[in-house]
Image (cartoon, rainbow, N blue to C red; front, side):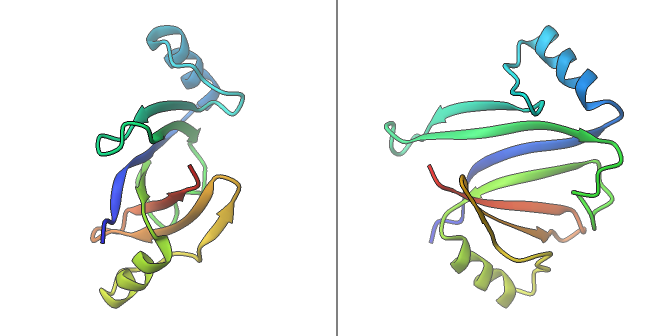
Length: 126
């Protein structure tokens, strides 16, 4: 079973997300959206007709979204078959932070890695 298929996003805390977004837009040319994030499109190597995306997103320094981790970042991994993966992770004793959430662009769940870093798993609806 294929598990992680790519990086779905990179999220980090900062003192001023709007200022950070503008800096990256002005200095590195990120094409940001109204929420301050940027979407990078790419095509899968195994199927060059299948497009994927990776998100880049600054968060407010005081965000609680990364909790219970105390780190200033969170990585989002694209996965296949999230339900099956979650069952396997539970059998492996992995800490599952919440339940699977389904939104317009896919399914999400959060887990903790071996050092307590919060990890977001995303099964995209491409």
